[in-house]
Length: 305
Image (cartoon, rainbow, N blue to C red; front, side, top):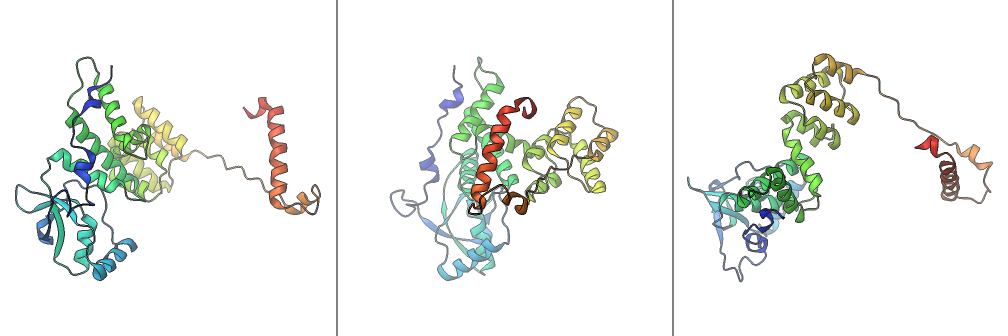
């Protein structure tokens, strides 16, 4: 039996997220709102950076103004909460402007979360932390709208169907979405190292299973030893943690063990030339070498498997 999560009745994506015809058939009005009245979305997971792209946006605004209005909703305490347009708002400030063109929409908390996440997930070059928190926020909003699983469905089945729904409008598979969401279990300093590409994604996912205190201990060791766990080491740390056996001694032993040096094979051109006609290009030589290696592999399965 399929989960009731598949039958969630939500405002359609087009109804929620259409911006292209803001002055057309939707009848929505673009308003000029003071920047001081526009507040960031609570828990907004996407970073607003003063980078080269921001400089280009500021210059574009100075030349052409804001071409696409922001989207916001009224706040109970006054002003408006931005759903889309955080970077545009910052660029306007840097450009010395005081007003921003905005469309005001009446959306509830979950609709607002879905809109905010989906309007940003389309961007290129998102950081792992941005995807991680965005997916988590969207998943929680979908679950709230779906309600609890029925009597015949376990909680785990309901959660899996929620992730399936989430992956339908994403370039990431349900499995990868699960893995991104795991990153939200990392301490902030470790997650920043993932963003900085100091810790590989797969390694970070394994480390996310360590308890917070274990992660703090790991950070201390990494700083003292100037090391980053390999994927295999991270898996072992996770295993000992799940068994309740991960302590300083175990962590120290794993992080200080010698790693096997990567195997590098260099084929000198002078030696290769004696086996090939002078007219052979490098590509032709490589083709012959790899075809011979494939034959050797088939004849030596017991060695290669």
